[in-house]
Image (cartoon, rainbow, N blue to C red; front, side):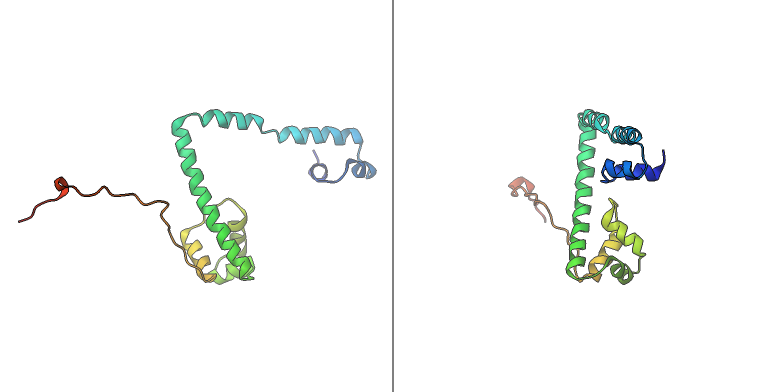
Length: 151
């Protein structure tokens, strides 16, 4: 399959416009069906749902999901600070001594940035990183049995 042709079919170009450029209507329809069938993810969704019924796997999945959500939240906050400061991604990259493409990737891809890089970006944006406890564990009040007598 010609990739340039597939790209045109995948795009929002009306079929009539493609047909007007010499493409056969029948081949356009066949390719559109092929593309749709390649993108069918129903089996994957069903299989994932079945696997998540396993309690151990579900716990691990939930833990990983929470970690990724926190990383994404930090990156969104840094991106908002960057935009508010009127700083381009390239300028931020120069400010922290990193490659432009690497910094762009941190903001656009699902990646796990190094803490050192996150700290450098925060400093370049005149911000700081804080860890905030979700909830405090309550300590049980001390009882007479917990007290240790000395001397």
